[in-house]
Each structure stands twice: as structure tokens, then as C-alpha cells.
Length: 106
Length: 119
Image (cartoon, each protein chain N blue to C red):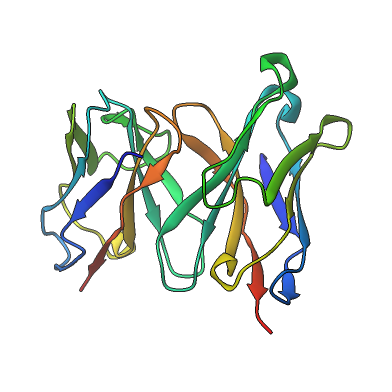
């Protein structure tokens, strides 16, 4: 199985900060990497697919980069509604696997 | 508006069974692959399995932790996805989400249904 490792597991930031979250795959996954945002008590929401494509309706403050095994989610200017937990997920092969999550808090 | 609504969760004893349903609306359900993803209390996300569209063979793919115990099926005439869970263990306690599976990513998610396995 492909292991997905996110770092950090949590971070503290302020409104307006630039925030980066990294995700590393245990083996090559090309650009088959997605990012989801989850708020407490809610279902995950797709933000970025295939490493760098922005899902429709997602603010352009979110961006994704990387390929191969190393990926980054960047929030260019943190907004109050962005405080949440973020997960990466590989779709290169089954079993589909997620990273452990990164909690972004104030 | 595209929507998924799960139901069927509840409390069951270890070794018992539970059948979850996911009702789809607002999109062409029969055309899409579907997946189940679960989240244990306070934990991360775990993929539980997928079913392809009938056009793509209708086959299922489930990971090792649930293979042989869980079954995924679909009724395209009723726009409904199912997850049959047998031989349940306490570690199966989780919120179960159904989601559209575009092959590349998970698109639409339901609100989730809680399954608790406890004596």
C-alpha cells in the first residue's frame, strides 16, 4: 500500500498568513494527488485534484504543486473560513489512501 | 443540485451486521463510480471500497481491512448505493460517507452516517 505522510500534523496561523502543507508518498504517484478540506462535523470537500487543478468554486488563494512523491498545498492568504483540517489523498492505485491530516488553527 | 444522503447507521454488537444506504439525486448516478470512505472518531479518513458503473463492469474493489466482511452494491433503478457490513468489529466504529468516485478524485460527498460497534 502507498503510505501518505503529511506535515505538519497541526499548525497555528493568523488571518492573512501564507500557509504551506506538505504531503509525501511512499512511492511514485505521478500527479495523482488530491487535497480535501474538512471542518468539524462536516464531510470533506475537494479543493485540488491531480496535484494542481483547482476545483470549481474553490478560492484562488488555494494552490497545489508537486509531482512524483512530494506535494504541497499552499494557502496564499489565510481567511477565517480556512481554519480546518486538510487531507491529501493518492488516486494512483488502490487501495486509495489518505494522509493523516493537518489541522490549521489560530 | 447534486446530493448524496446516507442512512442505516446505528449501534450493533461485535460480530453483527449493518447495511448502509446512500440515496443519490441531481446527477446521473448510473454513469458514475461510487466509493465509501469512513472516519473513526477523532481520526483521519480511510477508503472502504468502490464500485464501478455497470458500463465499466460494475466490479468492486475493497481494501484488506474490510475485504471478505464488507460488500458494496448498487441499484441504478433506485439511484442507491449500499454497503453491507458483516462480522463487525469495534474498530469499524466510524462515520461512513458515500462519495462519487471520478477515478481521479472524490467529488460529491454525503453528510455521513454513524456506525457504532460495541457490546
